[in-house]
Amino acid sequence: MGKVSGVFLLVGLCLGAILAMLLFPSSRPEPSSVAVAASGATAMSVEAEPVDSPAPSPSAAPGSPAPSKSAVPGKPSTVDTSALADLVPGGQVSVVVYDRTAKKNTVSVKSERSYTSASLVKLLIALEALQAGTPSSTVQRMLSVSDDDIASRLWTTHGGPAIVTKWATKIGLAGTRPPEDPGRWGDTRITAADIAKVYRYLLDQVSAGTRSTIMRALSGATENGSDGIRQYFGIPDAAGELPWSIKQGWACCRGSRILHSSGVVGKDDRYIVVVLTSQPSSSTYPGAGRQVTEVVKALLPALDPA
Image (cartoon, rainbow, N blue to C red; front, side, top):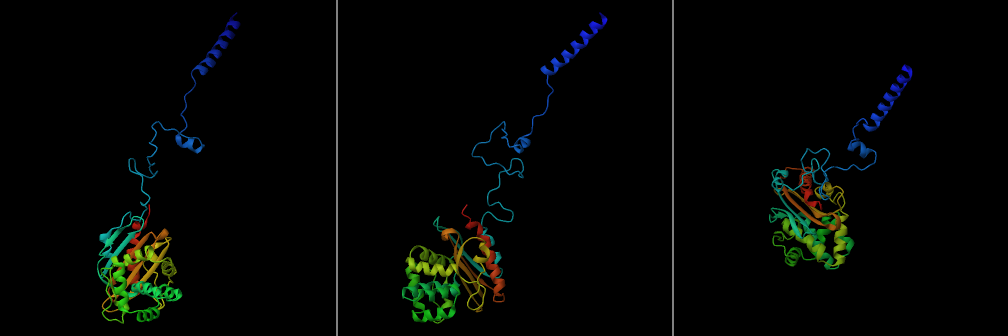
């Protein structure tokens, strides 16, 4: 009997242990949300975020807002207009950025200050020449390589200073004046505000044929002008992958070195950009050109459609 009772006791203990394991399973941690995500499953949080609330960056500090699209290291989110003058030490700078979608200036600095036009007056010469029946190829070459000989010939043929007076009146250019010396078309006086108006006129009011001729020339501007000066300073050097069409201007040295960068930038010619500078005559064209490029780089936040 002692052996039999011992066997029953042993069996009872085993059954009790099995029953305890079934009724009270050992606890274990649930898989982390990171592990669930790695397995391809969807982790559900206890408190769901609102649907339209942006998720914070993984590297952001707790409670800090998610960075905006423009918050890229080294790229400012707005244009610091007060700092533009510092980019042209010893000189003067005027700027206009016009957004054709918003139909307003988004940047305007000293826009009424007067400058020598250099080759920017070729835009007015082109308008007059095309209206008078000059072959498109001639006008396009004058603009794309900034050919001074063609400009001088067209200036003389079509009225000289009267070209400036006529088109300033027609477009409404309050600060544009013909040169004091009738033979020096590059001494025409202009303002950044007026050059922006010229582009608005070209893009919105001239005939399709005139617009196509001029804008094709500006989008096909060569890296070097007919005089050998590199004309990709300013807008081309700063715009990166943004499409552009330009008319540049440069002259020296009647007291200063003139470098201007003007044109349209962005898809569908959305932004008109005008940067006019007068720099010390002791500066070089490459050095002065880099200053203009830095100004345009500072304007890039204004050329971001986001």
